[in-house]
Image 1 (cartoon, rainbow, N blue to C red):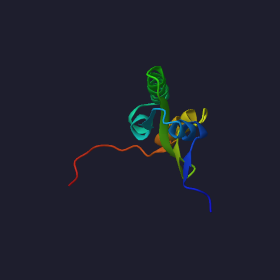
Image 2 (image 1 turned 45 degrees about the vertical axis):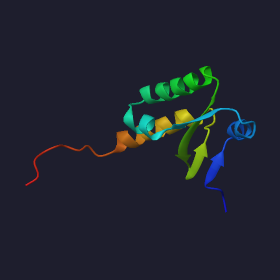
Image 3 (image 1 turned 135 degrees about the vertical axis):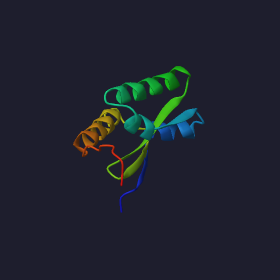
Length: 98
């Protein structure tokens, strides 16, 4: 059976070395900001963590697997998938409910 949790090799090594790791949750960025602002924000957050001497470990569910520490292509993929889901959603209109 395939694992439902995947910790990146970089995060595993940093934890083994007792190096600082900062978990970054992806839901608010992915769903709370429009594309491509969400991708730019996520990359900037990771950059700020690195500037302060820690390893960013962005967390997301991709392909049914909880991933801790996304790979290079994972952030753009996540943000683009969310964009496509939002674009395909049925429009909702607000009106009084009788």
